[in-house]
Image: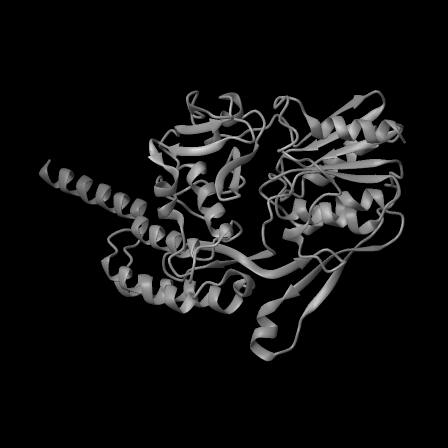
Length: 420
């Protein structure tokens, strides 16, 4: 009996060890740290506009590796290092409970410093912030009872010669995103009145964003409406989109809603979508791979082509809707439509997520942690950096505050299409 108990204990111990994964030594953490720092040093393509002293980052954070006692500790160090480049497109593909939610894909608020004040400039539909009554134009006073200027300190870069407005706005969005376990409490001021808001009072909705379908569609007075729900990374979207488009062939015009596409995707899906609306080949975005220029002094750039798709063409008037949750490849689709100069086409929205470039993914040799960051710069074919693009018909939160529950995007889209 004693022998059986010992054997059972040994088996359980082995199972527990397997579940925990192999132990990573301090030296292995150092190897992964150096791999992480070097990969970004060699390939990240936006240092020129960030002012980050990346060598100083290494000097600041490498001593911390000696104190690591767990994988979570290591993740926390890596997250702090990424704050130094204050880029929402540079992320780890793992998190802890204390990690900030990803911006914009797991957020319900977009905010930035406007004239020196931390202001909410857009609220995502049908999630906690909007349901709790938060609207654009509100000034952030405190988060979880900590004054905002004190609360953002944890999310500000430490290796900048001076803190920029861009870096402060980045920190503000991380602060408002919250972590994965603590409900958020915001103290906000609107038109001279301060009030407390609890966007997570019905549960942590941002942890479980679900959609009924990849694509939603309907008819509005014979104007077609198609909304893509955050699946531009899924090649299975292509036949679904094709099927919906077949049902829209007899409509007088069409609205393509990209306001719920924050997680990005791939260019195969992008070209499949744009390909429905061209009858000849067009350039739709420009790429630059900076590492080659950095290493050899030879610029590497190219323009990507979208081609017509056989038996798939829609030539009637079209509106593209975008907002701050139009991210990455959705931004590429939007600037692609702008580049086509297609007759009867309008782009309506706010500034988009302004996610820098195209990301490359890497895996650390020991912890196997994956991370991604921009290694290619992306441009409109007219040379404008993608992240700087503003829609021709601009939805301005400062002017559209009379009825925060109204969908001014759709109102402007329908007004435009009914005039065609």
